Amino acid sequence: MTGSSGVLVLAATPIGRVADAPPRLAEELASADVVAAEDTRRLKRLTTDLGVTIGGRVVSYFEGNETARTPALLEALLAGERVLLVTDAGMPSVSDPGYRLVAAAVEHDVHVTAVPGPSAVLTALAVSGLPVDRFCFEGFLPRKAGERARRLAGLAAEERTMVFFEAPHRTEAALAAMAEAFGADRAAAVCRELTKTHEEVRRGPLAELVAWAAEGVRGEVTLVVAGAVPTALVGDDPASLRAAVAEREAGGTTRKEAIVEVARLAGVPKREVYDLVHRKEGKS
Image 1: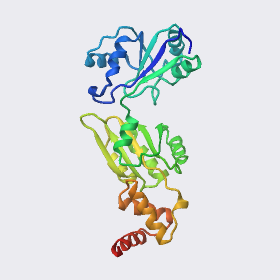
Image 2 (image 1 turned 90 degrees about the horizontal axis):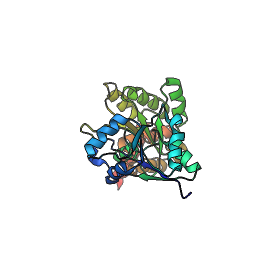
Image 3 (image 1 turned 45 degrees about the vertical axis):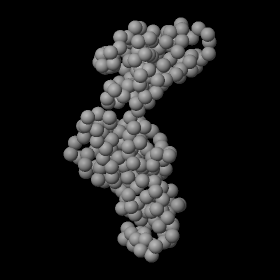
Image 4 (image 1 turned 45 degrees about the horizontal axis):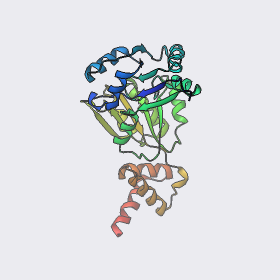
């Protein structure tokens, strides 16, 4: 890092309640030479709620001008200024503007740091009730049905828990496409309005969530979907079937959902798996 270069600070902002703002956010807003904001109107509301006065200059930095505005912000960094980047909610560059500026700063040996804080991805994952030891973030799905189907088909064998962002008016279509690609019985959770007054988390098989979403969905939506279980691990002998159900239950899946999924993967009737599991318990 050159001695004259400034610092790029990526600051997380609340995804719902203003009280969730990290304490350092107010300090950075007051002391930064430049504040680059995805929406300057939302920034004004945020600073009002936090009781902060911005000391530096404010510039807009959103998807439409990100490419054009990055060189000027990089110039400010190279001149030794402290540039603070904030988006509407959550951490910059995670499905929000920021990646281009971070990449440019790194390329020019400018120090990049962050003010950690609220994240819709991690919050939804934590409350979903699905396995969290391994996960991947897939952002927004394509809007067009054909492109969305192809993207999901490529994820059908993904074994990690998957997290998606989605617009409320496309949630039903997204869930239906997931049920088609992953199977109607795949466990999932719809996390709506996280940390806000009307927070709601709906959990269940994809087919049930599609029916729920058909009534209409409002607010910010994050989808969490269980990963696939390798078919090779599900044999059709009694011991393998019982072990597969037990493994899924240990990972947070309900027994009913586990039996349905194991039966589908092993190619045997659900009743057979049900009887094997409960017959074993009856003997113990």
